[in-house]
Image (tube, rainbow, N blue to C red):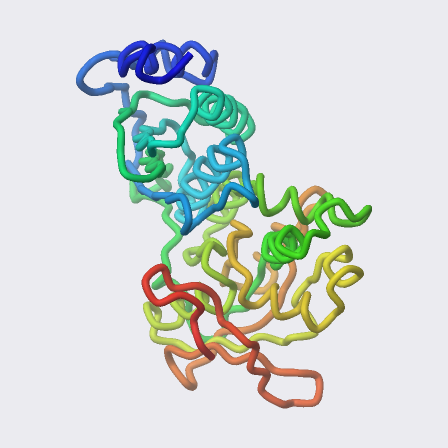
Length: 336
């Protein structure tokens, strides 16, 4: 069946039905009205919005629309996680290019549903329109708990202080390594599966963000544009310097095996789209977040010197300059 035969409202009904329990049908005003409405728990309301455009964030040869939907959910949940907020509801705007098919939209809806179930969020509404090219925008809404004094417990980019340690969850660079292997035609190599999965279906870390905020930490950012690029935001907003010990940055074993240690290291520093959390705070508090299920590794420190800059040191005491610090959505690869 062609999209034109189904029509806008028929397609919306089809998407909502396909979402199953990932659609928020028990809120005050569920999908189907002019706007969604839901009751809010006590705390700070936290919201974010993110867009994915065909040709910029994905190409047909690198991801299916199922994968695109998963990434769209994960990237928004990750922004809430970086604030220490519990994700709750999503609004999804769908722009369909002239080549979009009903089968692709079904796959997109399935990806939304599975990613929502995995991340504990539900879709409260959205919109569908025709456009010159396919793109998706998701607005995500969550809640930050209050502390004993009634103030919201929020993680902020401007909360790093000299003397803090710096830690990261998981293994950065896995997503970038996965994209390199896809581009090189090596996605089916035996050791590549975990890296390709990390690129196409990354996992956000909302529970880690909540635990960090509950532990009294006040600074975090998610790795969406590259570890150095994102830590640069923290350094500038907090007016501090950040120094990383290169040898302490955890590398995915499959990335080292398939790309070599140097290339895996460069991806860890500038690859992006990992959606791991980088946190700063007291060393013991960061160590307490480490679990077998999700390792949290100390990788550096916050200093008063060179405010606004992030420096990577080698074991030889030399400053390391990777090919790229990450990605700027308007400029492209960020220079070092």
